[in-house]
Length: 472
Image (cartoon, rainbow, N blue to C red; front, side, top):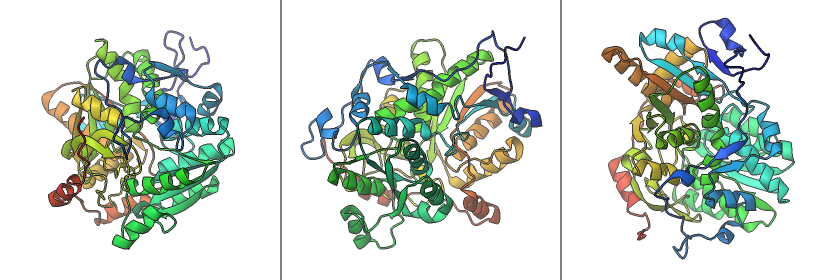
């Protein structure tokens, strides 16, 4: 008997399934989590601390205060297992959360696979991706502290538009440096940010010392997330009424994203499914961590034992081709050094269309988890990703952003293996956003002009040679 409560689990096997189904499972509705989960609390071996960029000594909370709000610094260094989500943040989350868990029955049929494929879809947020999950609390904590303006970097524009959205709700000014390649590839993301009140600059720019230095060396530089971070950090450090917000990589960002996995665990339990394989794309790692970290907790408890697989672009493969070392989070060397998988802080990836994955390093906590053996990583070139995206769009109806096409391609690979082996694995995929503002990329693929861009070994060797030599 239905009790009128919505539980956001849907089956994509017909037109009606595109609306939210009302399903009763033991009279329990899936609700928005009231706490974020901190994986660090459950790791027997803790990650190494970030280091001060000048002294190479462990960073102290006061070292971060020129850049970050106090509550975010506390969350960055905490060992507490759960952090309460402020009611004001939950109130904004209600605009789109809980997000749907969808079974991809039409894709399963297309692939003729016995695998059962589910995807957790974050594209229903106002900004169209998972990024508001952390943009909202970051802006909230800055507003509570009396900060007037926040600055940031963005690649594809999903993070920048999410921060602009959050600033419009809490009345803060927002200034964004968007990686130049994406600034011109994705003009409607820029307009989205401007609609929510943000100022947007292509990076590298002539506004900052860091940007001018890059332009002097290469006037046609496509930019990178590392360069854009340097520009935003420079502005924040020089202005007392301004703080910096980061869309990925740091612990507090990954913490906020765990609302994805916490919801998903309850959704899968409600339909009696347990994932055998969890797949997500990785650039800085926030979407991947958001889904996988709560499942890793359950894996550590011995309750489940899924394979957890990160998928990165072949042109920017920090987990699969980088080194695990202390390195700067930005190109100019202004941020603390973090122990992470890195291609070198001045590595500038080729301008692939998955702009949100063009980052030289991986989140330190994901890097640490990878080193502990709790997950694995692969890389896939962009043409195979877009081929998978077309198959997904033509079966499931959702046009994915270029970033999650990497997860889709890896899911299709596994589903085909299941077809060949006869295994009926349960595959859970992170679908972190829609591609409505990425149609120029699809146009290139459909016209046959999209090509694979891969890194050059010499280019990476040159970049890795500049990684600071730090004794950990």
